Structure formats: C-alpha cells, structure tokens
Image 1: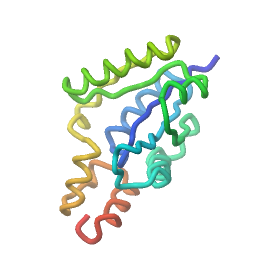
Image 2: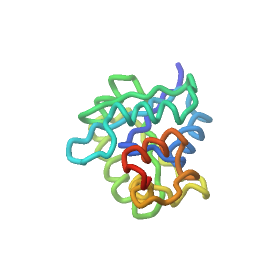
Image 3: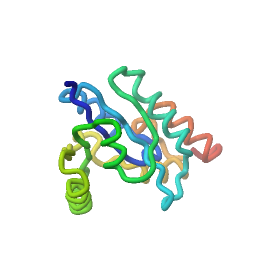
Image 4: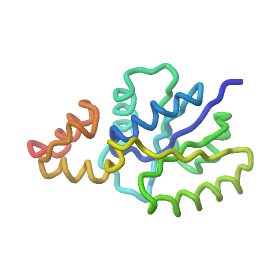
Length: 162
C-alpha cells in the first residue's frame, strides 16, 4: 500500500519554504496531497483557485503531488482521501505549541492519522507567507523567496510596487 501524506495550509502565497518541505517530504512518502485550506476566518490575498494554481506551477508538475482545496476539518478531508499522515512544518519554537495542540486534537478525532513535524531547511527558515506579502506590498525583492509565478502574481495584486 503506498504511503500517502497530506500537507495542509493556507499557502497565501506558497513560498520556497513550503516547496522545500514538499520536495523533502517526497523522500519518505509515495504521494503527497497539498491541501489548500479555505479559511473563512482569514482574509486571504489570493482566492483558493489562485493559490491552487500557484502551488501547481511552483511544483513543476511532479506527478507524485496532487493539489486540492478543502474546507472543514482537516481530519475529515484526510480520512476521505485515505491519508495515513499529516505533515506540518515548524519554523520556530513558537510554532510548536499551536501545532502540538492541533496534532493532539487531530489524534483525538482520528486516532489512525499520524502527524509528522518537519523543520525547514536552514536557508528557508525565516520565510513566511505574511512576510513575503509585506515585502511585496512595499516593493521589496521577493525573487529568492518564491517561485517566479508567485512573484508575478504578487506584483499584479500590489500593482507596480510589488
């Protein structure tokens, strides 16, 4: 039976940190579902459809990766796909408490679903979607932080500044 994992997030937008984690996770899973959360409590810069398209473009059409949008509980989506594990990224110690609580709740809701924490590569540790958006909004150089498709989309969203 192939090992299938799920990597969920808002990806608003996807960064090189996200893509690094996705590519590195493919070392120990056969297939990865990148799940784009439709979070009604967050005001996203990009629509769900735009985020799915940017993620797909950023991954250079790797057949082992499927990008899908979802809403509702992550565990329900994971179980519907027969996923065995959820991958979560930890950039800093401050991420751990929230992620740990979420992993325990997910285990409560779906005892067969494992959570695996991954740390980013050293050269992507500082990258976050919110920082990328802020730098792009004020015209800073984001070319080393995101895929060119994402940089172009940010430039379009923010006009000539991005």
